[in-house]
View (cartoon, rainbow, N blue to C red):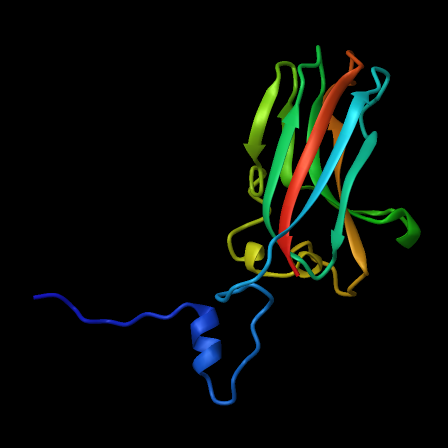
Length: 169
C-alpha cells in the first residue's frame, strides 16, 4: 500500500501561505530568461596568474540558472570562473571560483555547463539572487562574471574564450 503525500516546493508553499510570501523572480512560476554573452576573440599569450578577463555583467539581484564556458586550445593555462564587483564599484573580487575552479584549457573546451563545477554554488545558492548567493550583504547594481588565470600562465595567445550566462531577474 502506497503513501499518499502531497509535497510542495518552496515557491508553492509561499504562494499558499497566509499572508502570501513573495517569491524571487522565476522561482516556481514563469519568468523570462535573459542571456548575457561575453566573448574575447584573442586571449593574450602573456597573461600571468591572477590576470582577470571580465566577460559579462548581470544584475546583482538576478538568479543565475546557467553558466556555459567555451575555449579554444591553449598550450597552457587554467581559469577560475567567478564573481567580481564592477570596475565602477571598485572591481574587487567577491568569489574568484564561485562557478568553476581551475578549468584546464590545454585542449579545446566545448560548450560546457559550469554553474557549480567548483562545488561553491550549491543547489540552495542557485535559488538565491547572485549577490546573496555570493555572500554579499549590500546589494550592488551589477556584478561581473569573469575568468581568472590560475595555476599556470597563458602561453598561447590568439585563442578565443566565451561565457554564456542565463538568468532571471
